Amino acid sequence: PITIGIAEELAKAITVITFVRYRKYRYILNGLLIGAAVGAGFAAFETAGYALRALLSGDGANLYNTILWRGIFAPGGHIAWAALTGAAFCRVQGDHPFNLNMLFRFRFLRVFVLVVLMHALWDTPIKGMFPFGQIFLMVASWVVVFLLIRAGLKEIGERKITV
Image 1: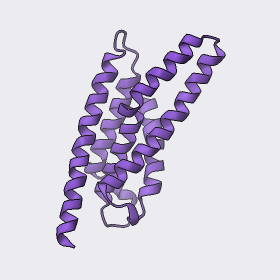
Image 2 (image 1 turned 90 degrees about the vertical axis):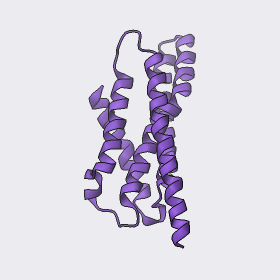
Image 3 (image 1 turned 135 degrees about the horizontal axis):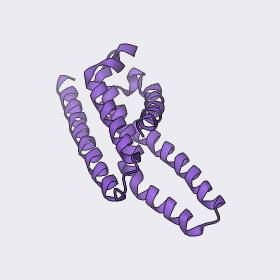
Image 4 (image 1 turned 60 degrees about the vertical axis):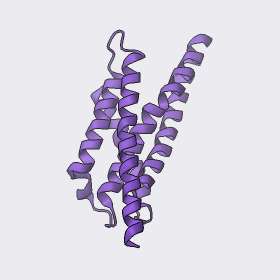
């Protein structure tokens, strides 16, 4: 599970950073929004793969359950995690041009490591964890999202005062 978390979150982080590294999208809220869009796209493609596998198995109930549960959990999984990564990067970048060293700053790394750990826990095959473990991780993800929304609104408020 940890290697899956690292690989998938790194892929989403690279995609999000590709979009937000331009100073046009320098605010925390930009990172949240673009990250959420990247996460939603990732979740949709991954769900399509799982749905195809279920369809090819010939089990219609499994197909339905796969799409249903992944749709319910997507906002607290891939969408929230990519949003967190995007917001953390924008928070670190600020008004400065992109520099690879930004990815090694504590403010970014702590969020990225948290996201990877949440993803790894999500994928851990612990008997009886589904759906309670995922619900707990969804709530935890959204608590951090709301904290970054708050930081983003504060950032916008501070920018308005200086302009």
